[in-house]
Amino acid sequence: MFNKYDFIRDTKDIILSELENITDIDQFINEIIDNEVIYYSDCFEICKELNFTHFEHDIFGMCKDICQAAFCALYDLIYDESDILEYFEEQTNSITDEL
Image (cartoon, rainbow, N blue to C red; front, side, top):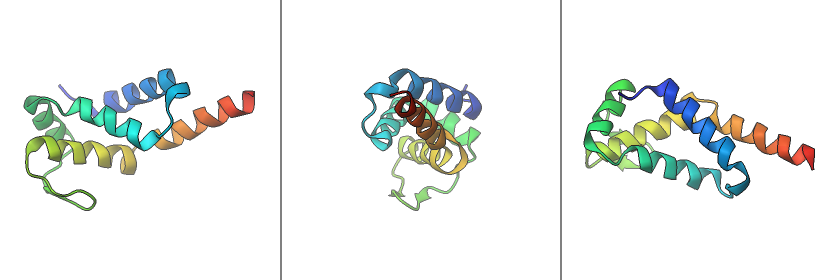
């Protein structure tokens, strides 16, 4: 079962473990989201948990299926409702400060 708090925590863990290999955080996040929206059953759970019921997205346009809707829901969660990008910046700055 999908849980947004677990997803945010797991995403931060992935970022921390791959920090030195990340060259483009947006592309990296898109890959993480892509991995989450492979199976229809997961996508339905994501949309339900995140209350994503409006299938027209401001950035991506109209969603043609549940996988695109779940992608948009996770995208919004990461970019609008979580501190994942700030976390990435903090971790990157801490590595830079150590050098």
